[in-house]
Image (cartoon, rainbow, N blue to C red; front, side, top):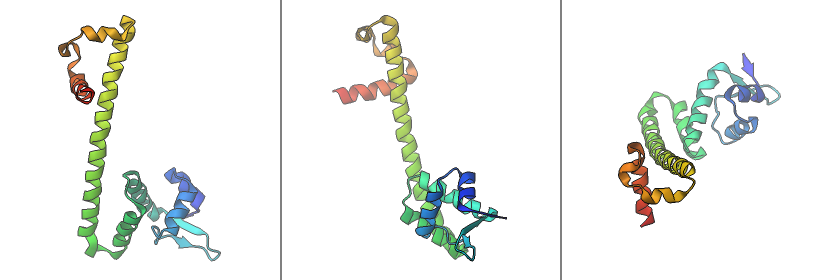
Length: 150
C-alpha cells in the first residue's frame, strides 16, 4: 500500500512540509515517486521516517541525519559508523536530560518556596527557616540557587 505525503505526515504527526523538506535535503532516498512525480510512501518507509524524527528531536543537524541515512543505505559495512553517530547523540541527549532535571529541581524548589510563602502571607517567612527546614529532596536545588546568589 502507498501513502501520499499528507497521509504519511498524519501517521507520523508531522507537517507535510517537513517531509518535503527532508526529501529535498536527501534524507529520503527510499521514497518512490509516481509517474507524475508524487511522492509515494510505503509501510516499510515508516521505520526510516521515525528514525529521522527521533534524531531530529535529539537536536541532530539535518546534515548529520543525512550522513546517518546515507550510511544506512550503504548497508552492513557502515554499522560501526552508525553506532558511533548514535552513541554521540545519546551523550547529547543524556546531557540535555541532566540539564532538564536540574531545571525541574529548581522549579520544584521554587514551587515549595512560594507555596510556603503563600500560606504565611509573605516571602519573609523564609528568612526564619534554616536549611534543615527545607524538604530534603529540594535542598540540592536550594544550595545551587544560593551559590549563584553569592
